[in-house]
Length: 328
Length: 270
Image (cartoon, rainbow over all chains, first blue to last red; front, top):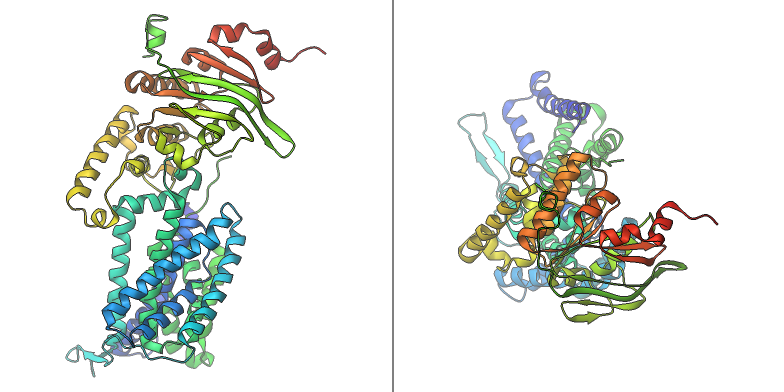
């Protein structure tokens, strides 16, 4: 990282923190209310991160931008919700995971393997096809109604710290639970990638396909593993989004919100995906609540994309992505 | 500490039987003939060099041995088994490792992780045990780590073992590349221009490492190199290619004296 880039990053975080606390300093916001907004923002950020992590995983290991991640979220949630009608939750979860692994295997066999060594854009187009197929296939097999997904997440909001603040802090327990699950998932992924030989092989493939093959790493198996892990992440995202919004077609569109998150965090960094999600969640909530009245509202809808646009202009590799230095 | 320089002609290494041989191999890309009817063999424990002017087909030949390219014609025998072509991953399993001309290291990973990755084929325990770091997985990891530390000591890169490879100077990256190839404990090591782009000092270091690998581990070495001085000092036998054809094959002295080789390198009057 060069000095200018470090300065840019620092400036960005300073701006972010200044923006976040400015309602407290200059406005007449109450501390309790402000904390609620910040917490709410961070928690919805976690949900964006969950989808973004799936994108990053596949991009890291195969250089493919997987447009089908959103469709995988929908497919996993649909599969789970319909299976739960016939069996207990745990069995349905395990079976859904098995189906996602099978899906990964099919994608590797039928889509990736014939396209090996093709340009990134060709593979991207192929995932567009996978996304369309999954959207249609899922709804053909499982139906296209809106289903309620209830795996026993707490629905009632809780008031905490009512001694410290006037009226206390209202915390959405479902979001808090989601944040906890996401945290565990990220920790598990970290251990898997950094501490196991298979994780090391995955990172090796991400860095250089040819060299990985030369030391005997089987590319095909690695891809199946990576898409399976992305399937698992899609399932977790599907469960959480599904129980919040209901399982319906619009779930597959949440991948669009994950795009600015990975642009912000960097396409190759899992921590980047998490922090990018948090920044966007926090930023859009704060600006909606405190700037919304001044600008006529609706900021939540465009905030993430404008931020991503600014990043593409000044820092295309994102906050934590790798910059490519070519030796001449 | 070049053994062969210290005692020229005195070190008698036992050259074994033929371990790898190519028979009448031809490779073309569309209309371009990269290799035509090339045959040569490599004996166990020897240092075999492939030289030739630019575009002579040296790297193509290496890639045929390594399985990256499939020749249209010819046969490849390795340790008694004859095939029409090799597969990259299979090659690694058989005991052939390689380094790359333009470095192909895992740049985002540490030196340690790069070399550990080289032991991939020798890892046996499953993912779950690895993640939990229990029992056999832990023992296995410790065992591999020990071997990797030996290689790190051998290549004298202890001081950078935790550094991200992308941050290292070129000469050290080349050593890591060699280390990763060695980690698989190969029978045959293919080196694609191990000294390209190095200064004199780095070249001396690398030559010493190559000879030590050959002497201490008994690894058979096939190398492509441009620096004639290096090739003549290191190799037992040399193959010379020009325009995809073999024009000479023999000891460094024989090759040096060959008129065909002199013509290929200096040009002929027409």
